[in-house]
Image (cartoon, rainbow, N blue to C red; front, side):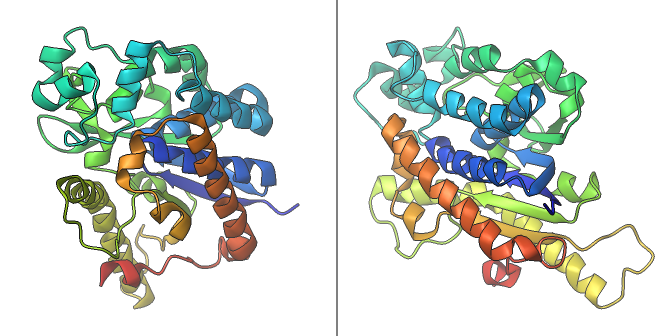
Length: 336
């Protein structure tokens, strides 16, 4: 069986990260991709770390089981208590203070800072990840590179945490929603969610690996056909634009370098042509609005998983031969 080296870039996006779970499961089941590095932010970082630790522990089969276990536990059918469930629901609500529900916790999140309504900094995801991931063993092995992004609160710059330095605090920093959790302190600096400055960060994949192929699993649509009118829809679209901004900047940089290489102006330099590929849910995912990123009913998560699994299979069927040869993402369509 021919195997090809690739890197993966996994976006954050609340409960819609279950779509990425499906894509990863399809890749693991197929077995033809040799994933050498993963970059992830927020829910994408969760998927990346759970995937990597499962792979370390027992290969592809264990990685598939561990991903399923993670998404089962965070669902409504999981073993979280009511208070933990409300906090988890808020996390997967995707940064939106206008998405008010009827619970006390959610209303508090809309009007008070987490230092006021969550003074103990309760984070059920931390407990869940702490039970699921062996960080000591994860750091000690290096089966694939991990690049987990977080946003430095003071400087506004992206910080990349790599596998040898990965801890539960660094992973929680990548998923720290500032309206819900207190900033996570790492090495004397405060960090918020990585999606603000790298959703996901692409540059470590082409500067710190020898692989040219990046497969981007995108769950936040760059384009929408309709113009939003309600306050909720407006905030949803603002979130999508905000958390795709850094990605579009990197698209422009990759396209610029590719044009210089094609023109022969970068011969003899360290620059290389990046081959970008895209997996997205298309019409099947677009019918789910941003408000459904709050929905952690397991049946819904499984539905997203199935869409992702099909998208992963379709990508391999249509584009596997192109890997290592040419990019299949037409950047100009996103940059014009």
